Length: 152
Image 1 (tube, rainbow, N blue to C red):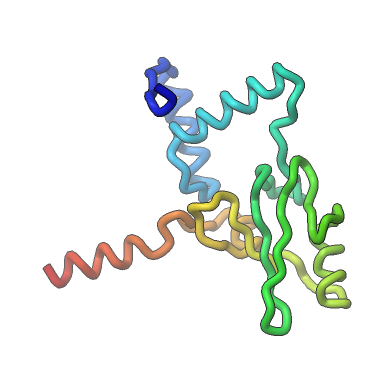
Image 2 (cartoon, rainbow, N blue to C red):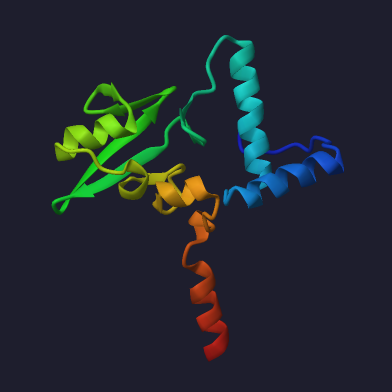
């Protein structure tokens, strides 16, 4: 019974607004998935829990998002835990994290890659910031699908 779904009526205009916002922000999630997350966040707030997420300037990163950067051939990872960015158990800002790893000041928008959900591809922070993020969950699917059609 846990995997069963029920239908809830949502006004057509609200659903289209949601789909439009997801498409314009480069978010590859289906509107149905976002509605479920919104309901869970609303229920969590009603029970005193925080929905969670980190606001990095104009970019919102939901709880559980992962951040990655490469420095001298090694990958370094941080994650969003609640409303904080955590690296090695410490709460940091993106700039502080870059400074801890590299020892100098760099542009975090250029060097940090973000994965907001486990089924998404890594996307450069600057791409999310500019609003030109491609569909990260299906990054190369269209190219492969197109090649299959050409050779069929």
